[in-house]
Image 1: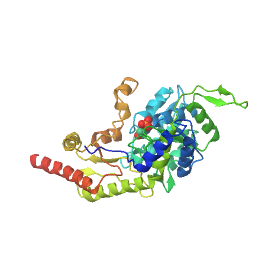
Image 2: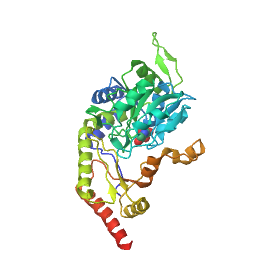
Image 3: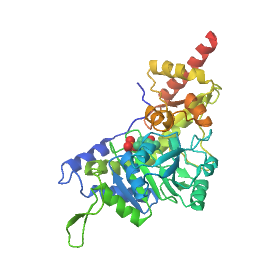
Length: 373
Ligand SMILES: *Cc1c(COP(=O)(O)O)cnc(C)c1O
């Protein structure tokens, strides 16, 4: 099965990890700082705090932002559930904003009318690696005194109008290093910020809320967690970060090949990068014009070893959300999108021949459908 995404691990990665395994420090050693410095420098942020997952990164960012019961947070329903699950964990209420039908990101034009007295933050998700319209979002946030926390789990290496995602005109930006993301540490994540108070609080909450006082004694001042990344994971992160440029280039090649193969196929809508932006192409999502055929195409491709997927069923459509305040909730563009989207395989090691096979199989589906219709 050609999966929709996968990691690329080479000998240098393996060596970096085994070196740490043979050293004195498996965790809380020197590698984590180094990884954080390199990540912050790559993105152009002042501080990075590496944690055990993207979900942990979201949890800490929300806590540090001071989000709590009674607060409302505007976000996109087209995301992985962790984005809003962590809002529920801190007691805040997700307020879902409809998406645009060109980038499938939250529609910045629809944000302002969702703002109430309880609104505290906006959480833009750079879906599939396409940057959200940040200038507008930041302008709205400033006008209404809201925090902006970017879920950039898909977008390490992406650029908004020439600026790297993570270079932060927002308050915080989170990344994930799960194996399907831009780079991997197995499990892992990070919060980036330019705010030194946020930075100190993130460090504290990552490790039980404990810090050393002036006398060198360990004291617990915040109610924290163990959300630490290990040193061997950090070593993998450092090694992977060196190859990020290559990974991104390869993902762009995959997209170009799909465009060469599928541009002329008028039964599907291909995703497009907005002119001034650079996508990290975490996901390659097409839309099937006739949504009635989407599930049939999904099965057809799966039976032929092509691991297509759905990103995402709207967060509010999951049973848990249906039971917790979103029973009959629906947004028009999100509904159109979630019934027609299909994620095709996209990762750096995909070969031209595999893209040809996937594209040919898609075309043969539509041909056989048209013959029988
Ligand atoms: C992957 C992902 C996360 C969570 O990251 P984990 O490292 O898997 O915990 C959060 N948000 C989005 C949009 C993601 O794709």
